[in-house]
Length: 456
Image (cartoon, rainbow, N blue to C red; front, side):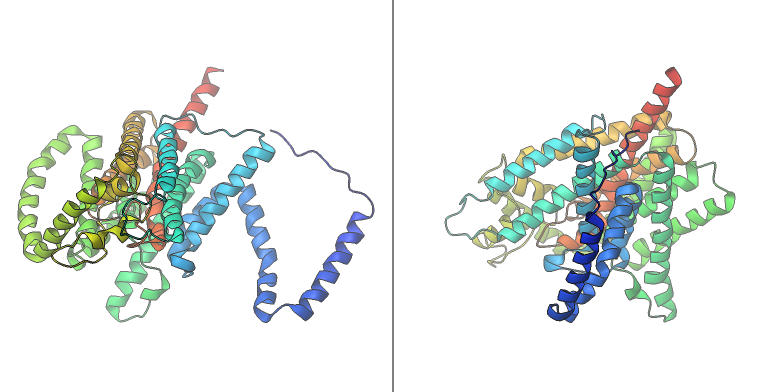
């Protein structure tokens, strides 16, 4: 392993630093406001956090995944601690590659090509979005466009961080169990205790549908396939899945995205393990769909019809530049020129795939679907290659989570939040999907390393 070269400092450097620190403290005491002095006091803590994340990047990833659920900070336009931490970790990783490793290197995985292509198309579409596509329509403000671009970049960055910065299964396991523990605590504090009259709901920030998808997927897969777990913990995970599904399906039935995608997760996990079991689920799923469809239509007929109307209008807007799209957030400002049911209002599509085509064109959608295909293909191959226990259970959970994300993308902007709907604050939950999918690449690299060592 490389080590940093030792540097001999001149004899006058230490007293100069001490004197400079004392002078800076004196100046701040007279000039700085109370708020600025408070920020200065937190500076050593910030430096300590940065150094810790530089030393243990996997620890930073775990903090980024869970921090947004408990830290209420919301900056301009919904900027949150999750976005800040992911951006910080990406910056530290880039710094490490340039300064320490003296090269920029990504994990040798087929998933890298569609992911990088997706980022390149995002950058091009951002530039395309500056062109005057409609004479009588305003552009989205630059801040909104940059916000939309940042969601794409940081989502892909979350994937890359886990794929490249999780060195072994221990850290991947710690991240997964920390998430499941936080998820159980979230369910208890946000849903169970308030039913008994306890005012605990605001102790956690509201989580999006992707959070529940991965909570169900990972808890179910570890309970079923991780034979290394003690029976007590496996039953506890089954209990967590059942409670979560009860909340989603019974208490929040109107939120179709949550329970539908979660059931898809479980069905895909079972089918990926045994095609016979998956085949047996087909008639059950068909009968359930027929029964539930009548209930959904009865309760959400207006919502369904208006979404169809919105998609038809979106098709007209997309025709303006179907190849590379209209740039980030711009179509929201174009919709008033296409009245919906007689109203000239701004609206969003409530569909991730329509959003992608409108903002990044068909090329962007192809890159996204290519990425999902490569990740699914990787997970399917790792079913047999991953070590038994945690790693293999993780792979099955990731396959289920991927299927849930593909489905929920049709029901809203849960996977890649649209700036004028879920917005930047939605990234706190959406990034979890990208994070856990990146874990498949991490397992792939770990298996390759073990195979190389065995051959030597």
